[in-house]
Image (tube, helix red, strand yellow):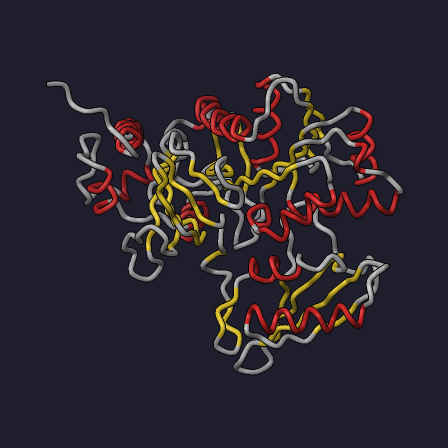
Length: 422
């Protein structure tokens, strides 16, 4: 009698095990970083299960990678092939420490483009779409990858590097752009500039805004704020990292949740302190093994991203997207605070044009205060009072609010830096 067909995630995990074995087969003998790291583990390409791999393979941390690139400058020893085979170099933004350089061969680059195409297809993007990439093309990997994957799919692509916001808006309207790729913050900034320039965004043909770089795309208040500003468009969230590539896309069944791209990653979620797997619905740290990026791989990489996993059929979902980062959490008067909590709360107020959170550590106890830049038509005093009360109610904190002048707070095209220390 034939076996019953597999259900749930079993077929995915079987495929991931085969991919993991192939990865180890390529990496173990040639990659100096992992040859040393795996030497005493007994892990080879005959590994019996994903569970066995997770039990025996040590974590990889960013600190290790930074130390390795310092000791073996400039690229480190985590290279599976001779340097002559690599043709791409990018680096991390350095927002959480020293930047890392990351290299790819044509084969590894193609594998990540395939992951980006999965993101696009999940968002409903087709060759008929016209895409605008509203960011400067620096050394950060996501920009180049998003552009190239869309071009390979047959989209008409407009690079927006080196242009002001008003110019990008004109390109968007004149060319009937249907897809905009940017950060959540910059989607709001473009809408702000449109209002200043007297541009009616209801005339835009834009139907999809794919956001990344910040958690705002899965924060309901931020999503609603963007979609209100762009009346014909829907937000579609995604997240990735230079070190690993495109990791997730919005779960098509329900917005404000992210789905792991299982074809490219073996994902684990562990308790940050015990390192034990968390159950569905519990918060933990996302751990990633790159299954297709063989040229500069990562095995059990501690991303620092805090997530809440749920399994739905064959999909691994991160409920609420990226909840925060383990190194971003602050304890203010006994209350655990993540930046995403403030983002959600402050985006509830239409009168807030921009904000900044100032962290003061003048005593043993850290304190916060808010700088709020109101829209010109908002009542500053009433807005400040409403924000103080809402923060007190939702976050159990009383935080003083300082109203600042119009256009006085910085605007961000890349990852926002709203939390500052004094």
